[in-house]
Image (cartoon, rainbow, N blue to C red; front, side, top):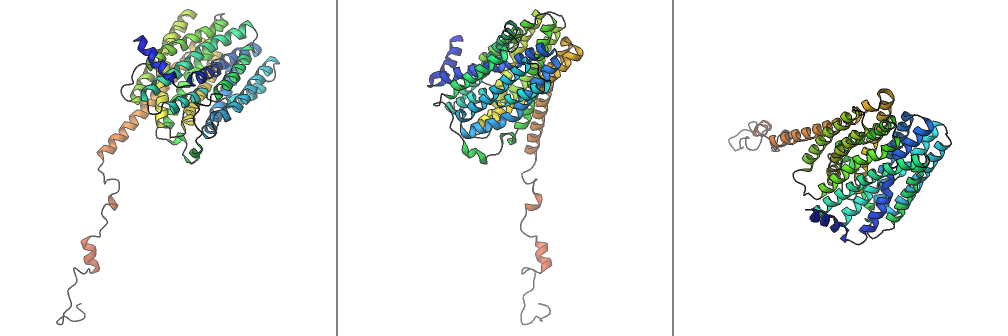
Length: 446
């Protein structure tokens, strides 16, 4: 079983150039797990406010949620190398300005403005998935394995990123995590975009295609991703505050890493299994599992033990990767041809918007009710995601059931009969009802 699992992933890299672009993408994706924790620790250390830290990170993520779809559309139209590199350079500039403003203890509004510049960060995971889709189009088994690998890579970066960020910010100086993340992001994108042989060709003709957001079922799915992102955003802020309240601020990174580790392992195992049943049903069960497991950190936090909380996050994280893999599969199946990167970026945009809301809500919860009670926020967000998708699924089934029961001509009953009725012919004096004139018939009777 283990050898078969390894072989399934090794088959992905049989195509030349896949290893090089994967390496560059991993380097560029690692800062995604660093920036949030780095900003929270950095701002809380210098300004003494978790509410401000959560609000700043939420603003940056909200700006990314607005800008990212346009960046992805440019990537689809003009190519990854031509757009991703300058967009990354502008995002790195924003990170450097944020670190400088925090170090100088500049007014709070400068933090919001600087972090908003990072909104141009390209969706590295989406670009990587687009390359797999381009290389293995039509091979459902390999694409499922590739999506699972990409989700595991996301979780690996979110597992290592908080650890590296917490270590740098506490062992060196508060701005060290943000500076290191900016350099890694720029270097990884340079390496990734240099691999031109695996890059999907630009889809210039997609300018005439409707937005992926208008595709059937896409908008409700993005809404579910918003609620799912709120789980991640609130969990990050609350866990950092909880560890700080226990006098172990440096342990926040490793504790969050355990959640990502559980998700990474679950994602790799999920990728070796052939998907069974409909994707909608699998997604519903994954959301149900996530909503159930997110209650574990809430219960563990009530004990006051950071060790128990770490174990609860490890188990709770196991529902994350299967949920995201299945959800991204639904996004890919509903995205119009030639708009794949934009479609997946819309899903990531939903996640980022949810993370932004979750970060803000988590910061407010810590300030008002404390970190222990704050774990109610991710539990509520997971329940909302489950309720939203359940409602959408039930409504879709009801619509299909009504369409099957209705007769084919019920929609347009007035246009079903085009020929005039016999009565109309008779009333108008049709040839069939008129008497024939003869020599014996008077002119008036005809």
